[in-house]
Every structure is written in C-alpha cells, then in structure tokens.
Image (cartoon, rainbow over all chains, first blue to last red; front, side, top):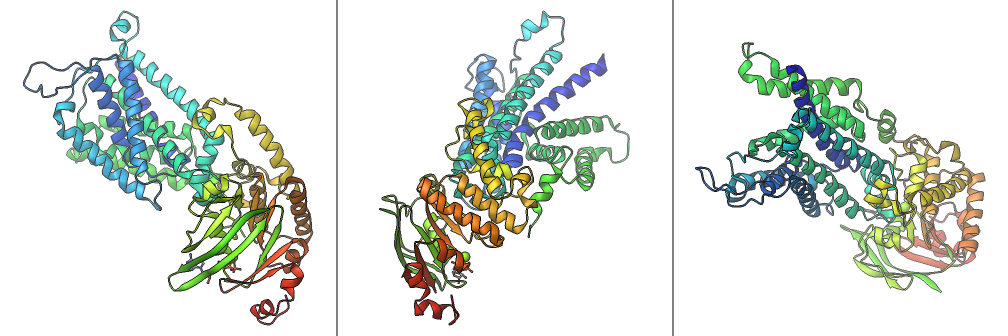
Length: 319
Length: 254
Ligand SMILES: Nc1ncnc2c1ncn2[C@@H]1O[C@H](COP(=O)(O)OP(=O)(O)OP(=O)(O)O)[C@@H](O)[C@H]1O
Ligand SMILES: [Mg+2]
C-alpha cells in the first residue's frame, strides 16, 4: 500500500512535468524557439492560482500578504494558465522580430525577474516565506468516496495530460503546426510564402507558456504550500532535458522524457545518507540525469521517440 | 496595365553598390526576363522587390499600392511570391508538406481550428492536396512526395521550390534562376507551363535566368543588368543585339 501511495505521488509529479515538457516542445520541438523561462511560467501559474483561491491571512506573525480572493479552484487554474500565457506573449513580443537568439537571453533574464518579484513583493506572494493553505479541488467530496485523494488527483492530472497531448498532437500535425515547423526550419521560406512569422512565434510561445502555467496551478493545488525555491532555473533545465531525451518535436517523447526524468530523480532519492559523498547528493543526482542524457543521445541522437529520418534529412546538404 | 512599378531602386553594401537606380515596369500578364553577368545585381533587385532587403532609395509599387515599406510576408500575401536562387528547402519536412505550406489563406493555420479540425480545414486541405498532386506530377516529383526535402537532389530541390511557389497561386511570380540544374526536356515543359499559366490564370512573371535561350523564347521583355544598373531593356531581339550587353558579357555572344 505504501508503495502504491508512493507511485501515485511520483505519478502526479510526472504528470505535472509532462505538461511542462509539452509546453516546451511546442517552443523548441515545433517552432525552434529557445525558452529559458519555463520555471517562471510554472511559477506564475502556481502563484496566480494560489493567490486567487486563498483568503487573506488576518493574523499571525507572517501575515504580510494583503491580497487574496478566496475564489473557486477552477477560476484559479484558468487564471494561472491565462496569465502565464500572457507573460509568454509579452516576453516574446520583445524579441520575436529580432534576428538570432535574443529570445534566449530575454527569457533567461525574465525568469530571474519573475523570481525576484515573487521573492520581494511579499504583500502579494508572502515573499520568501511559504504561501500556505492552498485549497485542493473537491477535497471534501473526494474524501467521501472510496478512493484516496492522491488517486483522484493522479487521474485528474493525467486526464489533463491526455487532453493536452491530443490537442497539441493535432495542432502539430495540422496546418498550424506545419507553419511552426517551417519557421523552425527556415524563417525566410515562411516569410516568402506569406506567413506572418512573428505572429506564429508569439502564438507558439504564449500557448506553450500557458500549458506551463496550467502545470504550475495543478502543482500548487496539490502541494498546499509553495515558495520561491520551487521555481529555480534548474527546473527549466530539467524540462529541457526531458524534451531532448524524449525527442524534440515528439509530444509522446516529451511525456516519456518527463516520466523518465521524474523516475530517475525519485529513485536516486532512496540512496541512503550513509554512502560516501552523501552530502553531495543533490549535485550527484543532477549529474546522473546528465549522464543518462549523454548515453541516450550517443545511441539515439534524435532522442527516445524523436524522428531519426527528419534529423538526418535536416542536416543533409543535398547536391 | 501596370502590375509592378519599380522606381530608382538603390542598394549598397558597405562600399559596394549592388543596385543602382533600377527602374522598370511590368505589365499584367507580361513575362519579363532579367539577364546579366554574375554579380550584376539581379538577386539583390529581387530581394528589394520582395522586401528581404530595405532599399537605400527608390520605390516599389504593386497593383497600384506602394509596398516599399511592407514586410516580405505582407507582400507575399498581396500576391508577390518569390523563389530563391539557392533552393531553400525545408529539409526536415516532406515534399508534400513543403507544397501544402504554400497554400494561401488556409483556415487551419489558426491554432484552435488546427487543434479542433474545424472551420473547413479538412476540405481546404484536401483541395490543396489535389493541386499539389497535379503540380508534383508535372515536376516529376510525385513519387517523392513523402520523402524529406533534404534528401532530394539539387535539381529536384529547384523544381520543388518552383512547385511550392506555384502552389501559392500568385499574381506575380519572381523566379531566381528556376531552370538552373534542370534537365533540358523538363525545362521545355516548364516553359510551356509558364506560358499556360500566363494565358489561363493571368499570372505575371519576372525571372532571372542564365539560360539565355529560355529567356529569349518566352520573355515579352528582357531587362539586361550590369554592375547594378539596367543597361538595356526591350524585346528579346533588341536586348540580344544591344552592343552594351554584348560588351557586358565580355564581348561574348549572348
Ligand atoms: N548581403 C550582401 N552583402 C554584401 N554584398 C552583397 C550582398 N548581397 C549581394 N552583394 C553584392 O552585390 C553584388 C550583386 O549581387 P547579386 O547577388 O545581386 O548578383 P546576381 O546578379 O544575382 O549574380 P548571380 O548571377 O551570380 O546570381 C555582388 O557584387 C555581391 O557581392
Ligand atoms: Mg543571383
């Protein structure tokens, strides 16, 4: 039973990471956009949802926060998604028209800015403290049912992963995705054929950021309590790893990559504290993920479920 | 009736004057061939016309509208489609996808209609597939429709580029050396096709070509360029016998 509980928790985390990876895949896999702000979109989703669904704390030592709306969870999740998408749109606006990889730099600095705002604007976010008592959706209803809350949440998260996967898969294989792929391959061709490249990039960026926001909201409502340390740049890099590992451009790959990363990290949690270098474990775990990535890419440069033929054709010079 | 009007275009790169005071008009349904030695400024002129370069001076008018400040994609949507001298295939996309990308006004290019498959997306897509099939057969690329464009030969890439631009069904097609690397038999059929499109769909063509034979055969007007400037302009016979053009080609025969 304890093992099942653990599996459910790992499954929920894997589902949340899968959503993050799906969002990253429309950016990088479909459109070729470099996004280093994924943790920030995740944070915006989490904090928006948390602030909207909790009441203002009236008393207490740490009751610095002066806003809170006590809205239904659904409203929080919707707002978290939309706000993250909006932030993605704004960030992308600054750089989609510029040549080169300005977007990479802008996202990197925006992510840091978002984290600083969360850290410093305590009236809104409780700052470096933990924002607590985030309500769980339908908790009182579920407790009357013969299923555990974790099982319910597991099904909720993976139901959303499934719906998101289907929508993104269709989008990617349809005419909209075709334009994104063209932009990934060669901006000039898309322009020459009349595609408003900037607009497509903005849409792609906003949509992917929105999914990351959705993941953030789901995360916040599951863990009760959030704090800025949950949204470090290392999360962004883990999601990058998941997408590359699974195979950039493949949504099934993004999900598989996310699951593999989460499982790897959870398994390495059970290394006992008595082993040598145990105090270095966090770094060793990160290294472990890196080693797995290198090994997979050595044998499958296209990633686990990536398209080898496309990769090969894409790098051929012809003639 | 004038479709494209070019007035005093100029473009420099550092010290190099690539295009110098280029002016000419193209009438609707006219086929205009642009010739000139390497480095004459032909491709640069194309880039200025299609918005891929901003001119230092001059004006481009298309269908009565000043398009000088419009972006390349905005010009393309108005019916000006170009090809590239060095074929720019979307190497990581199959041949058929390259073709379908060029369809204009596709309802499925909005994210939501694409995801939900609504708004007439499927019907439009099916229609475009039929058009693509017909063009790919003409270009002898039909068997390769599911092949990644990156696996095509150099000549096949040029053909795909031509097919893709025809998929866009433009009013004005700007072709930068469309026949380079294409076998003579197929070149003949493509020239026929260009004439058909002009007659049946009122398409207008501006094309750069080193195959002088091809230029002379189908052009109504020939523009001869040298050192960034228009040296000679007129009927194929006139330009062919223009001494200045002969000189530009190092005294050789055109
Ligand atoms: N982006 C650029 N930067 C610097 N110089 C350029 C650039 N593009 C073109 N040029 C120069 O402008 C001149 C005209 O080049 P262009 O490509 O227009 O010639 P062309 O007539 O198309 O020649 P070809 O028949 O060889 O294709 C050349 O001297 C070329 O070196
Ligand atoms: Mg050229």
